[in-house]
Image (cartoon, rainbow, N blue to C red; front, top):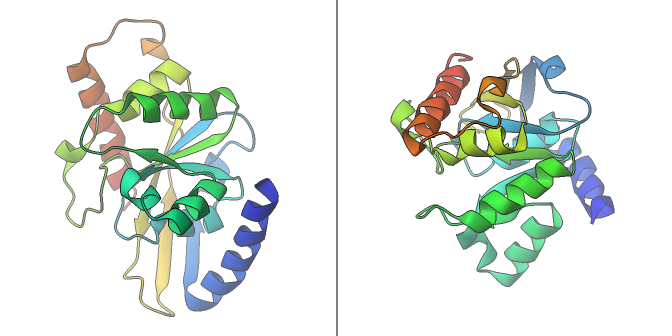
Length: 193
């Protein structure tokens, strides 16, 4: 499956860099190895594709479970490394999959708002984002995408400095605290506008 991902990455790079003009800043903020969580705002269904092209490391995305209901689409997104999440509940299976990805020193991609959002709203942040970061002891890299996604338009991708919640490792934390920390992540994302 890694070969398939690399093949799609190459083809996607060629096609999407013809269709769009990429402007990426802060790429040096993404660790070249080891576990890391990429958290981005979500404005289009193309966001995972664009991040997959812009970031040199393979990203394992948490994706809405509805994508896996179609057999072909489900196979495709699985082959590209994505795994399902039920956005309507606290999906323990998605959290376990996320922790496994990070335990394997891979890159986990998450859209903290859980769905496409066009207006900034920090309240949309899901508490599970901070929970995964703290349980896995993994840094979070905030990313902001800005684009109209019209052919030959510009896509701006601003990548911020890693966020570490190391002071919370091995501590008992309430759900409300996870929510507050996840809101801090959203603030960091939107500060990159």
